[in-house]
Length: 364
Image (cartoon, rainbow, N blue to C red; front, side):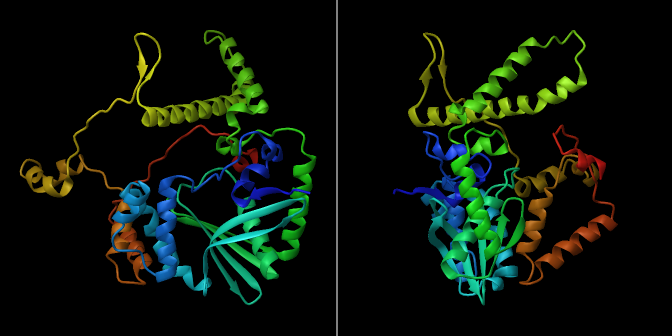
């Protein structure tokens, strides 16, 4: 009997839509597939092995075709996290490959950082992007199950570090919980007979050919075409239609991204005898603050100049941390923010956005 392979990195899709495993498109990893992600992971690997970030990131950026500023921002927080919590991962395995039976399937995965402490396994996964609405817990549960299967530990602690958000989240499971989860999910995959639509869909390669997506998108477009902006529309209809419209919008965003990638790869693409699809470059002037400060100060006083300038809070705190003594980074950042608040230099802006949320979130 041939067992189908499942990568742990695809579990955030499969856990919510088991039918996706059997689609004609091969499900790939939903994160860290881009060259930028590979570059970030390579630098993170050096941080774990050596306890410090390489001084020169340029070779990594060039090797993977990655923006060096992006690489610097992402790995900066990796270094901060490792300096503060790295002692939780003694004698770590790095980029460790695991495989185990998973019900009627074979589960595989590469764990970024793994350490066995007494009768526990400690796992760490670097995420080079921003924290998304997609639930990554199934992926981490998959890694935890693999570790528990190999080392026969009683407990697994798994942590995801979101490098762009500069946050992390952790879970703890017993080996018994992981075993029951594996059996339940395996049975769910086997018994599934339909595709399930949700936030996970945006990362699925079967997105464009998914029958569930096609049906929803077709119905949504028909509903939009039937709207009459001059007629009164029931609020309930607007509310019910909004999530589906958001899904169509994401589909359009995905298509635009694919179109851009295609043009970058093959060049301009003819549309008809008169038009073609191309990438248009625009040039914008950018003022370099350090070089311009003295010149501008000759023309403007501080109060007037301040109206022309905004300070990026994240960049400011990173700079403060980079210049702080080792072990004092958090303290230096906190002290700076407290002084700024005391001076009335912190202004809180309310950002209002339209979102679909659980009703209990509003009731709290």
